[in-house]
Image (tube, rainbow, N blue to C red; front, side, top):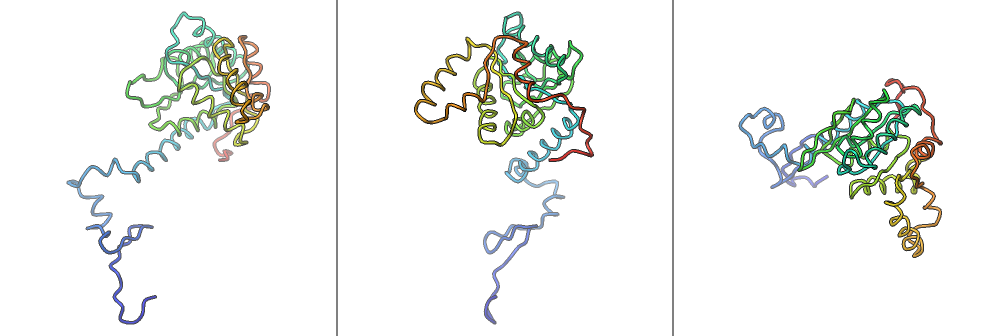
Length: 259
């Protein structure tokens, strides 16, 4: 406390925020809320972004909370229909549904569309988690439950939280990002019993050789980290590997959901 006679600094309390002296803002929070002629730049501020981020988590959790056991399938949006990679993703989507799993993808075209298509044609649940991009793609027509996100990190949380494993088809930077995100979470113990399967040995062999011959050889990772994933060219083996550590339990009631 200040000594008697000492002038208290000007102070303004805005919820949990305290502003003093030349940091005091004119008016009140209610006044700024109700002023229809105020500056609209506030919708681009970080506090407002926090609210949008929160709303994306709420919408994602709400849409997916009762999803049965699922496997996320990643792969390139540039995989063309009629190619071996597209056909393999269709077969993987079908096989995952036949094994009792829902299928989650990024909701876009290419390998994602193929996996969603296989899941839908097999009568399973086909989920697409889209992302806002400068080049708009939209959700492919084979998605039954779709959620579009603004923020990559919110979308990544949904991929991991609501899937019991990943099947990674050949893909580009986005696919690699999702792959290494999953491997890092498993390596650091943030998630447990989370199988990762790379489909297409010819495509992934260069990366695996580099991990073994450079990353592990130079001590940047341990040899056991190479056991965090499997590589295969066989659809049945891919499904067996990604589902072997988990079974499809019944849907979790929303009331029994734990964060």
